[in-house]
Length: 190
Image (cartoon, rainbow, N blue to C red; front, top):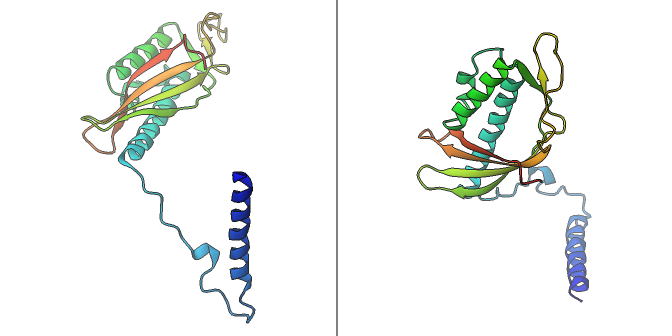
């Protein structure tokens, strides 16, 4: 009954809109074209702004960290990684890149990701927790060792899909959000 009533109301509103548009038969132009009519923007809350800024910083974190993993011997990655990370995540990832250099190996492929801001705290400092589902199906660790170049070094026991959590913190500059902590949750499949 409620669905029928809503359908009738929707039909009446659409019909009324069509009649008002078609009602002018004198050939005069409407006062405003549909493209010039603008609706007020949806008001954004401080939580929404913080979540969007943190998600942008998280995206930057992934872009830079994937570049470093693809070319660990390409340069000193610490200054570049510091654009998107703060300690302890920064030092942890710099150590991971150093480990790739020592093996020697590099990463190929890209993670599938589905990040969501799951917690927003506007305390001091503002902090956003992002939960992601990483899909490592197309990501592989490849040897650069002489005589083994290109050999797959993936750990067969590591899951290919798992939950990943990042804490992103706003630093004193309002536009400076950095990934401060990361936690791969290999036991949580997604």
